Amino acid sequence: MDNLENPLWGDDWTEVRELFDNLQPGHAYLNHGGFGNAPRTVRANQEQWRARMNANATRFFRRELGPGLNTAARAAAEFLGAPAGDLVALVANATAAMSIAIASVPLEAGDEVLVTDHLYETSVWAAGRRAEEAGARLVTAAVPLDADAAGISAAVLDAVTPRTKLAVIDHVASMTARRFPVEDLVPALQARGVIVVVDAAHAPGMLPVDLASLNPDFWGGNLHKWGYAPRSAAAFWAAPQWRSALRNPIVSWGERAEYPHRLTEVGTTDRTSLLASPNGIAFLRALGPQRIREHNVKLVEYGQAALAAALDLDPATLPGDPGVPMRVVPLPVPFDDPRDLQAEISDRLGVEVSVPKWNGHTLLRISANIYNAPAEYDRLAAGIKSVL
Image (cartoon, rainbow, N blue to C red):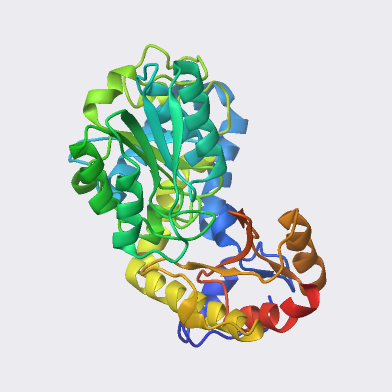
């Protein structure tokens, strides 16, 4: 492993870092928000499930998979604060959850579907496809990058009209790392007669989630990012009034089952990541969710400040939200294809980041997790001008 230190975590950081022994040596992985990363113990549990599947596929798929998924669904539901006795559907990722939810909403010609300019692009596409199929209109609410929570709520609610039937909003926006005040927005939208879908790709593990209190119409979030499950694993929850209408986009053996089982059954796909997801939750709890969250936020704030100093920016002007271990820094130079810059940073600096393009601006997004160290952000800050 790399010779690094992390005083923001404490004396046992080296032991924690060694649990992520799959990281590329010499590389700084500052993009946990992109694809997540599971510790060694959780990956080992997945391999145990995979070995059972390969040793006797008939026994596994006929007798072991269902009970294992039920156990995992109960663990996820409890972790996410679902109403007592509720289960969540376990699906591949938040993209699948959003597709299922949006496709299930009844729309008519003339209805409006509301999204924001922070929403993940595939969720926008799913909303656009559903609107087009129904003859509805897709409406985009513009939310300033530096808006506070009240400003975010105002921007969304001001875009609501008597024709607004569906709103798809972020819990934490992937492109801009902004935290949307869903605790206020969900009831405010529902009070206006709007069906609310929450894209919570980053929320599980990053933030405390209480679905019973939030009570959206639909909610979907990844477990393989801040919940330390293997890729790909996500939880999908729907309010009771919508469950009978939900359909798996892939017709398989769960077609005639009840919610949530009809959404989880997809033939012989490898669902060992879902089966191992309770171990990711257990890993988070063993280290202490609050300790992890506080550390990650402090570390990403350090990284954002280091980048601001390198780019001659005032860190006080850069966006950031409580509890969110991701930050963005607007870059002074626009790029036609930010993927080229992302690759350049990786190849020349040995650092992985996300470089989203948002409203004509090129953003550099960093994440922080317990395997990261301050020196990794220093490396990025020291080299960023040479790459730009």
